[in-house]
Image (tube, protein in one colour):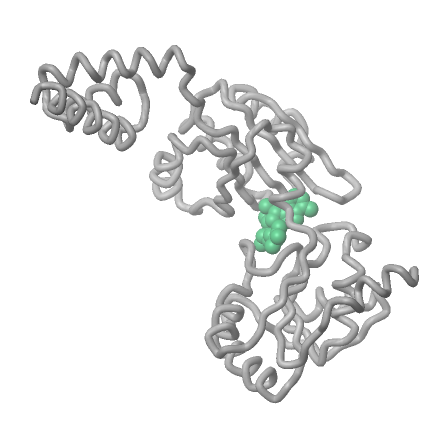
Length: 298
Ligand code: SAM
């Protein structure tokens, strides 16, 4: 490794009695950071989702370590063991099968328990499928709402998606390949057909594909090639349209007229129905307008 980089890596301290949360590649093994490699090489043990997967990955980097299985079914018990080892002064790394631990992956409970025990937790940033997909999507929105996996049951999924209808930020979904078809159908049923959707498939792998289209075109794209129902997917959905200045003026006009005849609550509810805007925000604005009108009347 280049000497200058060695200096950079060494500048950061790697205290003992610390849990290192290390991001690993989401496909291409070359995406590991130099600092992640350094950390994995100095720790006393690595807690990982699947010891076989992590064992293979470490072999590719010429590393061999004591591995501790830490998956969603044993996180609490493992946390206790890790805490004892950390209290004895060890350095332990936490990794998942791919990407950043605790992001739609096991790890959050362990981190929580370790922090609650007053021990230090240090992140080693690196790949995450959500951020990689966002970075190459071209969706012009500086806010995103990370959903992760949707509920698997149709009714729950429908209710959940209904609750997202007015989210203005770009929404980020993770999905298993065998469910991509029904997830797209659920998105098509829940949101306006003109919204943009981005499929980021097999990121950093040989058959990487990033496709953007409208929701109206989404099912046809998935069905056009059987390979598109395989592999790993991040799905991005454009947020709810933001009202233009013209729309905003019209909303204000409707709210004012209704406030002359109805209560604040009724005026906000009716305006929300007419304009499709959020009731809570309209209620706040209606209260303000009513207050101004009352002040002017006094
Ligand atoms: N912790 C990981 C991260 O930071 O991205 C996510 C783990 S989650 C169990 C696995 C999901 O991440 C997959 O179902 C898929 O939605 C997404 N994913 C992981 N690797 C991917 C890749 N190479 N391309 C596209 N999506 C990927």
